[in-house]
Every structure is written in structure tokens, then in C-alpha cells.
Length: 464
Image (tube, rainbow, N blue to C red; front, side, top):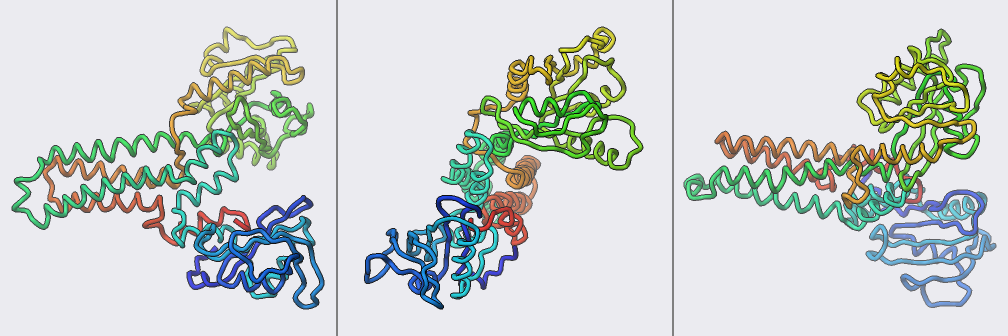
């Protein structure tokens, strides 16, 4: 999406509900001409002198070229600035169905409306100052949230909790920067000013420590996005069977033929409130088949990206090089060894393999019969929460973009504190403080580039 600021006078329209058969479909219109368009195509059941703002009207939507009714609808006109976009907005509640919604949208486009780009309604809300960039991104989080905790974090961000924390940091930085610039403009007075050690301490306590805390709280993103959980192991260890058992459905194809899974199969699961993004992957083994080689390469890539790994070991077979490769590839990750097929005779050499199997906690299950699944769910929860995720630690969950900007700001503020301690010229200190302030401004949209805005709003669906 390209941000053409000259197009903000366009009246835009889009279907705001998913296409398909349902009880209600909503078409949203925003811009200076939406009321005029509504008057041309809407016939209220009870004759009214005008459409009053923020009232719901029952009537028929009609084809302006023929006058034939299209559907009986509920229509709302909302006058700026008390709207989502801070522009005039009309919302049409019709019956749902692909053909019907398309017909209504085509009718609006024939009256001069332009089809909205993905996220353009929320973009206009941002550009018109109704919300900042953190609140706009929280809209996506609210839609995509995978847990109740994620919904709470997103709703807090929409209400401005994260924005308030960043704004408080910005005000502290502005205050410190103002004193640094005063010292540059009036060097004679610097000798009577606060000692430089105190200035360094103020940056440390007021900026560095809180930013480090916010960066740590970004671990809370698992509640919004889900824990990226890779199910890995050698071929025929029972990875796909385990996925199906956890999901309680036949999601992956299970056969005795090695190499059945060649692509990553992803599904969502919630265990005791913890959202997991389960990924069944191709099994480790030496192969010559090019397609299976690509599957194994994809498995290795997903392992690197994973937050958590379920290492599936088949107890009916001795540990081999492929098992050891899986364990080694999980090094440095949070992981759980799932010893599968406990319904079959044991052929693991537990004494000889004890060192490898002791690298991570383990749990025994049978994906075939379901035995041990309750133990597995508890072990997954304990392993994830035991890794440092605190369900109630924060009311914010910075995303990757926020974390990058916070890390940049942290680096600049640390450099400013160091320069003060080294008795460097205040011009250098002020430059570091200004750079840190700009980095914080990127989070809320104060100093964000058009390219970043394009990237953010392209993630939105049509109609939002």
C-alpha cells in the first residue's frame, strides 16, 4: 500500500465483515461524500427530514439507476470527528452473502467511492490523530490474538497503555535533553548546574532501566502470537500422530512409510490458556530425494525460529544419529523430550543414552493410545512458564518493531550516560539523547517513515 496523502479526500468503501453466508454483513464508507452517497441509495422506512448522526435507520437500499430495492438494511451515519476515522462515516448493515455484499459495494463504487486499501480506515484514524501507531498495531493484535491473555494485552494497548509508557519516557528524555542544550548555550552556568554524575544517574534510572524492562516484557508476545512450537524428530517417531492426538483431529497424514511429512503442517492449540502454534515437520534422516531434502532443510530453519521444541523419540527403536541430530539442533532452545510409543517394547539403551536424554526434561506418552497426554500437556505448560514467561508481569507486549526501536533508543541513552561520565562535550551528549528520542518516536509514529507505515498497514484486512 502506498501512502498517497492527496487521496485522503477520497471517499472510501469496503466490506468490513468476512465474505460468505451469515446473518449480517457490514459495508463501511468513510470520507467527505459518504452522506451524499447514502442519501442517493437509501430509502428510510419512516420519512425523516435528514439522517441524524449516530442514529440507526431501517430502510431499503436501492439501485440508483433503476430504483429497485437491493436489500432491507440498517444504516448509520456518524458525523466527524466522533468516528473511527475522524471523518464522516456511514455503515450499512445488510444481510450477508457474497453476491449481495458485492452488489452493494459495486453500487457505492458507481457513486464515486473508491475501494479502500487494506488497513486504510485505521490508517486514516492514525493520520487524523485519533490513535497513535501502537494503538493501530494493537488492532491487528486484537484480531489475531490466540489467547484470552493476548486479548487483554491488545485491548490495553488499544486503550493507550503502551503509548503512555513511551510518552513518559519521551518526556523524561526531552527534559534531560533540554538541560544538555542549555549547558551548550550557557556554558558559564554549567559549573553551577547539577554534577555530571547526577546527569548520568538520571539517564540510567529514568531511561535505561525502564527501557530494559520493556524489552524484557516483549516475551509476553507469546500470548498474542502464540508459542512457535516445532515437533521434531527422526522419521516415523510419531510426530504426526502426536500432532493429531494433541489436536484431537486427523490434521496430518500418518503412514508407516518413512518421509510421509515433507512440508510443515501448522495448527493452533491452547493448553491451560497458553496458545501454541504447533508445527509438524519432516523427519531427520539422510535422503537423496530432492523434495524430502527440501523438507528437512525447512525443518532446520523452523527449529532455529522456534520458541519451543517437542523432540519426539521412539522408545521402540535404539537412539541413532538422527535422534542425536534432532537433540543437537534444539540446543539453546526451550525443549521437551517426548518419549513416544510406550505401548511398544522398550529398545532404548537408557544407560548408554542417558547423557543425550538428560539435556532436556522428558515425558512418556503413546500418541497411538493417548496414554500420558495429560502428563504431556502439564509438562508443556511447566516447561514454557518455567522458561520465564510470567502471565501477569506486564500490561504491554512490544512487537518486533517496537523491540528494535527500544533497543536502538537504549543504545543511544547508554552512550549518552557514558559520554557524561567521560566528561565529553555536551554537544555529543545532546546528539545521543536526540537520537534516542527519535527512536522512541518511531514507536508511536512521531518519527516513522512512510516505508514503515506501508509495512504496518499492509498487514490489515480490507475494511479495517
